Image (cartoon, rainbow, N blue to C red; front, top):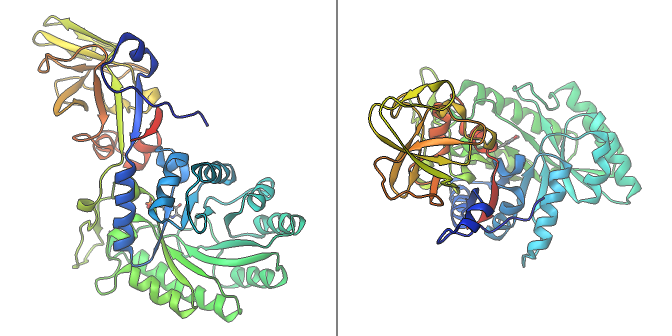
Length: 419
Ligand SMILES: *Cc1c(COP(=O)(O)O)cnc(C)c1O
């Protein structure tokens, strides 16, 4: 993990322009506020999902901020990311009665078992192929390893299927005390659909599976389901998802939890109604959340062009008037999606200089992008453009790129620091 470089922000000189050309600032204040908003709305414990390097925001940067904000659980991709986060928490030296627990969310391979046990990570498991190496590692290290069991309630991506498959795993748990069934969880395929019939079907299967766990005499401490959209959108017109989860957890004397990633970073998926659904179908959270990432890039060069001049690869953009263009040191290699390219004024994306908008001009290249600063005559080499920030969000980029904000955020590559 490279040491985050603190960018020099004021009075750019040629030396500082060279030092950092593009970087990301993560607002610890907004991250803290988003986490608190989510805990207020969730009606359950909120597991802060920082997998995939905190959706591009930097897991090692975000984890200590979330721990200070009170997060008892953090979710990571795999064992390696769990160790990186554990180290960041240790180094941050936060005065806490206990460190957050770290959930390894994307399954595990046999050779990750030792690291999971020694790193005090809690893996999500659903098969004997995962459980057996973990049990061996736990015995070897003289530890009892808490695990969370994923149930497939209808997404059919991963998880143990309730019924016979689940019975077999529950019997296995009873015979292997080196592993403790600390949690039972499932994931919803359509959480952003208000009144989703798929979700209510998954809820019912989850409820029956929890009773199956109870009947086997196992007592998980945590029951969790869903994501940011589960907090944001009503599954059921009469019962908020948090209340449903609390009621369900209560039946097995466990604690309810929802897992949230995207909304920690300030975004919500649009809430869409199930066909025929007459209840409320809009995002409750959007207006309470703030993006936490500002992506900045310094102007490399400024040039003036004459009418008729073609700009960039394949000359897709032709100036119809005299223009001033600023060259930015970022491109699709940095995660600035090529779909933001513009063949005419304002047909593509834009960056901001303060509150002034500078539209992208021509094709976005691998490491370079031209923007129109004709209307902002003060722009000079070394000045800071906001690639993402106030007035331009990952949701805007996602619209151009026909994708979701998740993919935009995960794809950004730049030096990161806290602000
Ligand atoms: C990524 C993930 C989440 C978080 O989803 P968001 O939509 O980002 O809130 C929750 N649960 C599981 C199992 C996940 O993989």
